[in-house]
Length: 174
Image (cartoon, rainbow, N blue to C red; front, side, top):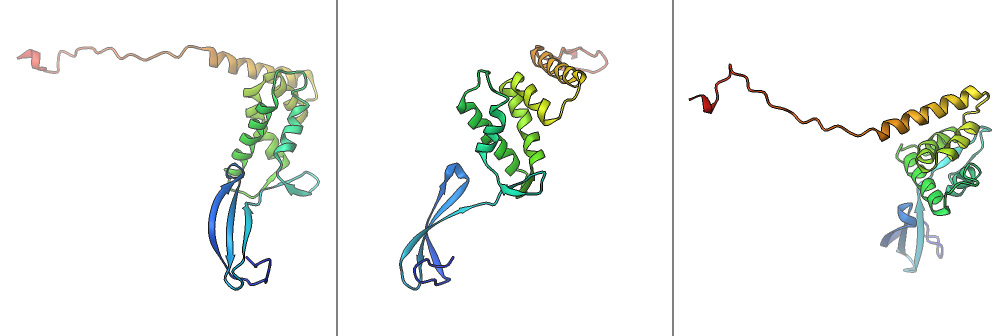
């Protein structure tokens, strides 16, 4: 890192702290030549490749804006949308790649939106997956209903009943 005062290419790190909820690192540095201190902010490069080929930095605000239309008139708060955007970013970053397609961003939104609000999910999915017929909607609604039924089923505990096998000797047989 070049010193912004004397342009010396050598500096030493004096202090390191995590910033922006872990999305970046703030480092306090000291130039080895002029001894002046300066701060750097390091972030990992994470970009979205749009369908047109344009590359732009990932933005949680764009995720929220894209989902906001689907949530119009639904009981979804701004805080819930902010959490959804954070979850989407964390999932995409966990893949370890620095460039993701806008299609992958849309795919990452779907499961979190389904958990948040099924109607908003259906609206978003209809645009994202380009539903063209009523059958497309019916298929997706059937999938949502099946999923809801699976979650509503009580989980059975499998209590093992012991059966005594008379051919195996036990301590009681003596």
